Length: 383
Image (cartoon, rainbow, N blue to C red; front, side, top):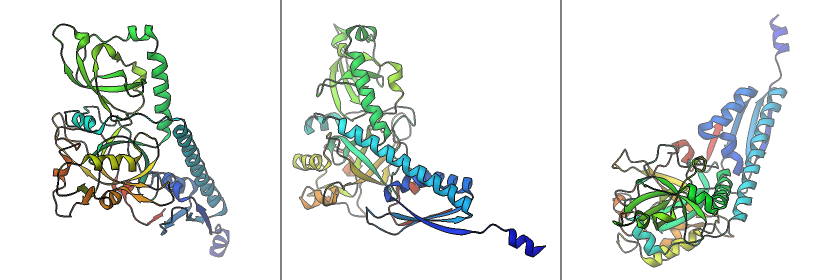
């Protein structure tokens, strides 16, 4: 009887396959959710082990189980790779269709950034920052810059294409005079989200009302300070130039994420970044040119805010990996004399206030990424 049971046990085999390193993030999923599901559904044991730092090297995946279990797991892994390929194709198409945006002068941008421009939105209304690769990095666009200590980025994702579609739809809608008449604004409140035409390119965007300077004689002449929630730009507009935002235009998460560059400070023991340093950073980041960078979250800066607990503002490392030579942007700023490294025991907070830096009143509503998503190390993932 025992021998018969042993003979009837299914044969356990080991299968090895290689997957693109760029697809590991999708295969594993946030906190390992995807690979756990694959293992549970297939009943196979799956091991992903990457000890290589080469960007182009494929990652070995070992699957243990019966032939049927291995087949199921392999099919599900290949489906994740296909999803990753489709996502990247959409991102590339979106990137190729985007026109470079005109950007505000750094000095004027800096002045606006120092004002209270809190984002008192409900938690989760901004795009979450989730690593897209096993190295803890994600692909991003830099959309606006005040300084290396205060800039905005967008995560490269299928939502990039959705944002482009939203901008096109808003332009088509608000260019119609009758629609602008329907959505005339009679009264504005701080924190209200409106539709505004950006002077830099005449397109319509979503913007938050930051400050209202009243005109005693004509409310249409009220001066409104705006913060463009998908890009990070700020601008002053007359009230009669704004429109109510059609409610369905709020369905997409706000895409602009406020950040600061990790590990570096202005050179020469200064608290303010020089104009030359800011311009160098803009060039290195290809600001508003829609050229992707790699970003890795190093830490989050917690700040106490007026209306609620301070949401974390991510400090990130930025890398330009799309040329012949990889560029660490912080290192390049140091090499060119615009920045120096922050010492381990140095107070980092003082460099987050000042010329173009994060003010004490500044608020951001980033959805915090789990620590497991932000690790930058060789990994072995097994289920």
